[in-house]
Length: 408
Ligand SMILES: [Cu+2]
Image (cartoon, rainbow, N blue to C red):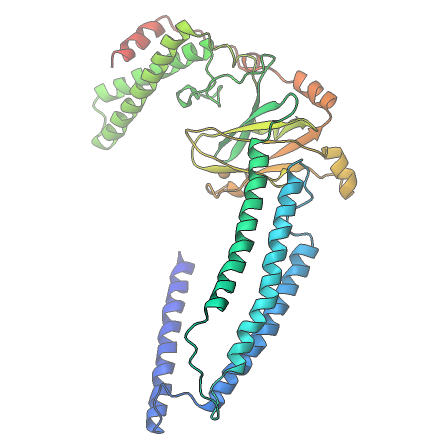
């Protein structure tokens, strides 16, 4: 806070100082009998020389950053997915065209500013327009940009719409402040449905199964009763509003749960029972090499962004919708460790959208391994139903509470 105030103060004082210096120099010009807007030939010469120097300054900056970042390997790491190579070629082509245009065009820009500076012998030639010249500088960049856009579009279509060969693996990535949870479909190869009203301490993803519906109705019913009790016992006015708001939210939640309960009479909600949930505490999720992996992304709270730089995967995770990205890993973690001669190397999943105070630490390891290793790892994980603590016995009045809520 103090730093911010100091920064604002220094900026304001600096601006005031500059405006005073300009006022004083104008005053000196007036005393010397010179108009403030008059520019001498000497000043013009200095400006023109500085313009010429900008050519070398621009080139120096370009090559300095090129050596530091591009040659220094500070850009994207080696691509470890099938489509990653295409993305890299697209990026290299764009970068080359931009570099050539910059290195060739900007010297002309600054040179002309220098060449045609004001001089006593010279008088500017009035040059209104030249149709041929204007057509050239419109059509040439248009062709280059259209080529780049269509080339990019072609790769984008290939990445998002190409038919994935073979049996793809679906993994759900669930983002929340500030961790990732992964979920795999069980032997039925179907991810169970989920709903935010079903989220509880032992069902972080809100997976819907007949058991979780009953358990959640019981839990919310208890909470609702506690809030009603607190409201009936004349809480202090400050808390009254808060309690009323909570009652509203619980009523809504109970209504959603009652609807789910009604739906469960028609459909079994059985897909989620054998799902495998990898909680944030595990810190890593596994995928097989050479097999298409379909990521289905959800968010619990704010907009996050799943970023897997080695696989050239980047996709927003927004609350209320599911986003997907399919890619095929081509290098296992072990192979990459050997390539880089780094025993502790790991592929990482990051959050690439500033989502709060611990955003910087929102990451999870991705272990890429052979199909056999992956199948072995998956077979060692517990299913959703098995991993939950023994369900609390559902109170006898659950059905009654649910029926009461349904009428609200
Ligand atoms: Cu995030």
